[in-house]
Image 1 (cartoon, rainbow over the protein chains, first blue to last red):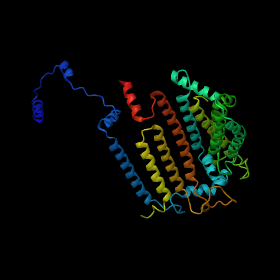
Image 2: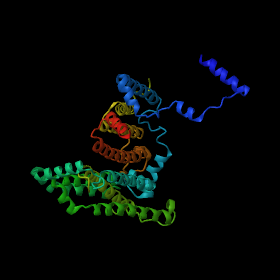
Image 3: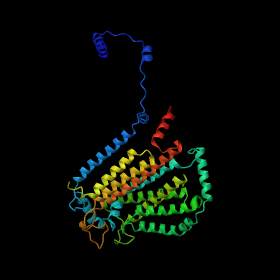
Image 4: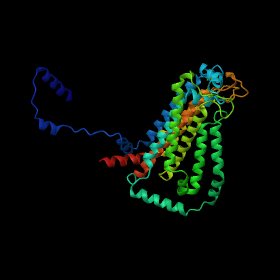
Length: 300
Length: 123
């Protein structure tokens, strides 16, 4: 009778009657509690064959989740209505005063590179930080690689040297300049037409990736080394920071000093938006090519 | 059921979000898990883009100097979607690099196999 024993213990404790316990005996007889490891759940699932139950539970949870969300969507304001709460005074202000205050015909560019320029700066920093993380994880180094990986890489390099790819090489030779030109066009026209730094930067990065797939590592290293990658990305980020903080400290909230805006619709207009767009485009292009190079060769 | 048919973009994005979440939970392969995560990202972008639309509005690029708010769609969700795309790309790239390192170390992409090997290594 467990509870009788406990009752007796409590009575003894109330009466003040205790037995001295030998410390060594207590430690020896004490129940060892195993440290619970969350990874043992998988062994448990395999032991009891709970896969089907787990999958059914997942599907049921997700369907219930979709149902709740659809109920919420049912109560949302109607799609495309002008009087929706999303179309409030903020967007009206951006549309009506945006051209006058920023000088950019493309209102989205004016918004993200003038009203919210620091947000875009942080976005460029996020891209840069993520390429730095990938670099830490995947860069080939004697300390970062084991022997098997080095063998695999050596084999890959030999295969790439033997491989013949005439169609890709001719295509890359004639198409890459046009792809890069198109990317530069989109970056430079970011404030007067659809596009901007991010879209144009991705196109430029794609052109560089196309060239690298056709001509391989050695030829690409003559044009674009790790040093140029680091210089371009860090230089663009620093230029962005200096431009925007200068305009911020000298004329915060458009008081006092301002860059001349020029005629709306010209390429050289809209104050600081054009240089900022170019900086963002360069960072994005370097980042995209950096991802590709690190994933395939483990080196930029 | 009033607005489910009218808000069809929102409904579709919610269903897509659920599908991506299910993918994230059910798949054992890590790369397929991150494909599910990307489906969820795309669903959120679709939802934001649908919230900013106005019937009869054109893209927010000023034509002929007309600066009347009723002529254009809402520019704010476009900026939010841009931020979201950048973050999604960064997260996907970093997680795929982690997956590549895990594959180099454990020789498998299966979550269960990787976790078992991790446990064996500790003991």
